[in-house]
Image (cartoon, rainbow, N blue to C red; front, side, top):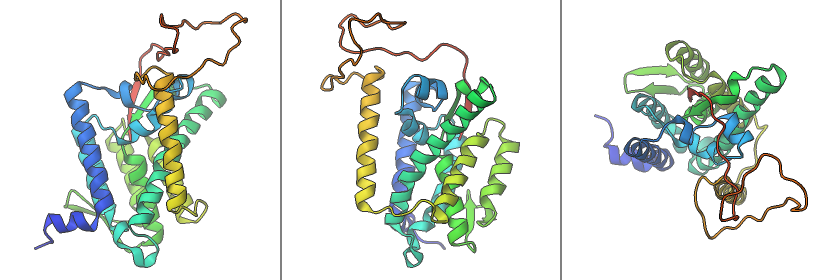
Length: 273
């Protein structure tokens, strides 16, 4: 017999917390009828519309229960990182670099979209909307593959993959089996994961983690306020334009206090990450 579940949860506190948060968010999404376009990451909404909060909401949101179960099953297996303090990993390392993976993989996805739109003129990527924790999952697969290549990745308790091949095996498998799976999102997680594992991104400690978290929270709240996505009456953003100059294409709301910026109309394509 294996260990009781409660002991495994105590051995993987950070992974268990993330799984709980993602599951709760999935339940709220289902209860309130929220869709991809409401919480997902798209170039149009995030870059053109200034809704930078989507970098965070998209990572922790899942619309499909199958998508949620797949990601959380992989994440549970990857929680072994928290138990590897003897090789420089552990709970603190896991928390610090999960924060890095969430933010940098999201930014890298937007960077790929920008290149496809601006360089190659593929407008399709302007409205592609991605949701899911897979960027982070693929990042941790990559880090564990580099740091502990003898480990195994267990999925659903029945499928076991050598961790050294798991990132690219999973990338190819999901691209073939799940056409909506975001190749760019998964690849972004792998790139950031290798950057961390090879020391290109390093030096995270409690100070930098708290500082980074503070900036994330500030940008998150201010972008929610500025785009009118949430009414935050205790925050006032003053206009920076010269009132003597004519305005172009912006209609102020009746109370004159904030600017309402709606996402441009058009059909979106959902990417599962």
